[in-house]
Image (cartoon, rainbow, N blue to C red; front, side):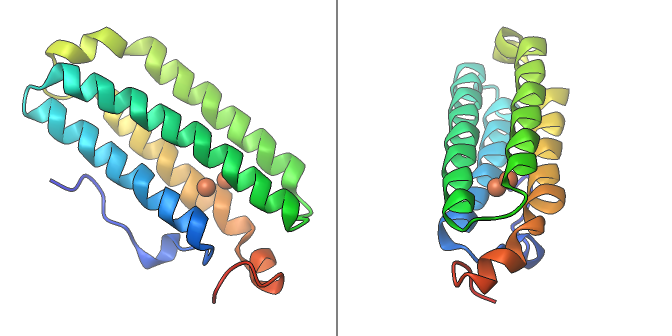
Length: 137
Ligand SMILES: [Fe+2]
Ligand SMILES: [Fe+2]
């Protein structure tokens, strides 16, 4: 099952960022699938991989924005730090419990985090990257 579908409205036009955003969306679906099928240990491993992916993505995205001299890079960095804090809260609240669950509210929360990041956070820099020729239209 695909937990969520990629939508054109998520596109920033930057190939690196968009590829990582797709991975984040797929990561949520992957976790949900493994949990639903009763593979708790795999779900937990997928959860940890998802977290790494998020951290790597933030780092890479910040680097791209620095390079592009995005004027609101500082605020954007702060929004990433907030997201990581929220991510930590979700992890604190679930973790080992996922081993025996077939569904968990944490999946919903992680999915919400991804959406917040894609729609509220990242569309802010789309036009800036386009003017710098770092994103397609
Ligand atoms: Fe992003
Ligand atoms: Fe971002």
